[in-house]
Amino acid sequence: MSACNGKLTANCNKMTQVCDQELSWRATKSEIKFAMTAKTDKWLAVGISEDLLMPFTDTYIGWAAIGATYLSDRYIGKYRTAPTLDSNQNSYDVNGSYVGGYSYIEFKRPIATNDNDDISIDGCRYYFFAIGGDFDSATKETAKHISTPIVTPQAICINPSTC
Image 1 (cartoon, rainbow, N blue to C red):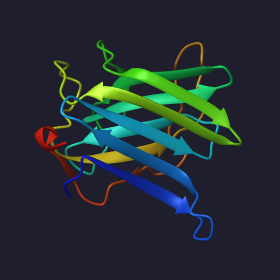
Image 2 (cartoon, rainbow, N blue to C red):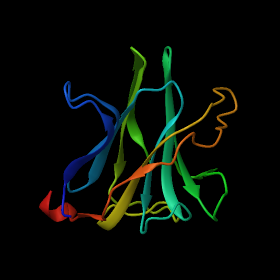
Image 3 (cartoon, one colour):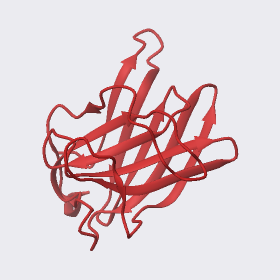
Image 4 (cartoon, rainbow, N blue to C red):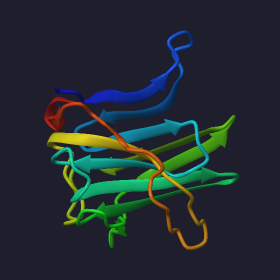
């Protein structure tokens, strides 16, 4: 699938067209903007992977609490390991809110970075959307996701030169 923009949804009401989970993206030649929305007060995360598996995935984890939004750039290494904080935080223009039981977080990141823990957006990648467990605003620690993340059914191929 070739898409400079798109979305991944789950648990949608057919009558109202409102979804309990939505990940959307819009790429340009130099950056990509992600927006995550979910009916939860837990953390949200987008993962970028070269395959359908969680290990070796570039991950952005965040939460929107009253008066504050937090987002961090992390990397999942081996199977069943918690994502570790990247030494280089490659996200910017972070905004978020928690309203009416829904968390919303949006951010941008470069298509490619010089960070070995980041996966370039240029090419064919799978996108994961996870809803977490609890988070600690002070330590920035997160509990494991509460359900299986949703993932794009096929790789999304983004060629920034055509976006």
